[in-house]
Every structure is written in C-alpha cells, then in structure tokens.
Amino acid sequence: MPFLITAYDHPNKETEREAVRQAHRDYLASFGKRLLGSGALLDETGTKIVGGASLLDTDDLEEARSFEAEDPYAKAGIRADVKIVPWRLRWWVGTFDKAGHRPSEM
Picture 1 (tube, rainbow, N blue to C red):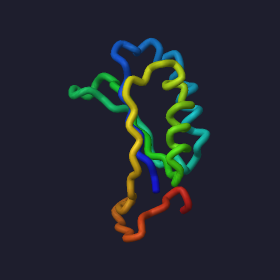
Picture 2: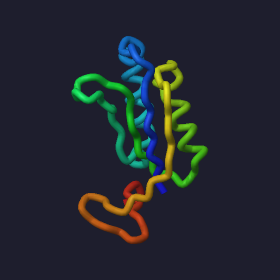
Picture 3: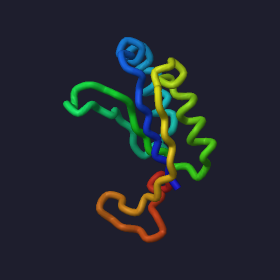
C-alpha cells in the first residue's frame, strides 16, 4: 500500500532549499518507479513553495519514514511538519481496481 508523505517547510527557507534542490531531485530519482509522484506544495497564490508531497509505493511504514528522513530537504532542516499516512490506490489513470493498483509493478 503506498504512503502519502506531506511535508511543510519552515518559513523563509528558500535559500537553503535552492542550495540542496539538485540533491533532492537526485534522491527522488533514485527510487525509480516506486516513487509514484512527487511535487511542491504551494501557497494559496500558487507562487510560493511551502512544502512538498510524495507518494511512495511501499508496504513498509519504516521505509516511508526513512524515505522522508533521508531526503536532502529534511537533512538540511527545511521541513517543519511531516505527515506520513497509508494511502490505498484504487483509481489509477482513469481505471478502478477493487484490490488496489500497484503501478510500480507494472
């Protein structure tokens, strides 16, 4: 079952975020197809990054916690609040699967 990871940043961390952005992207890429999606969370204007969200295809909560803890953004002290919750993937690209999709295995 995938885990949805939402992470909100401390305010005014733009310089720190930019300094490790490429390391963060390289880290995400290292998960290949198991990282189903990831992207920035934006403020209400849609112009300022306030955090990020990722969807990691794993059945292991500890692996999801490690995924977040080892992210360069987390290591740089940018993250203020992180939530990790199991997320049952039922709809995938317009298709319902009663048992739940496993797109990283496709």
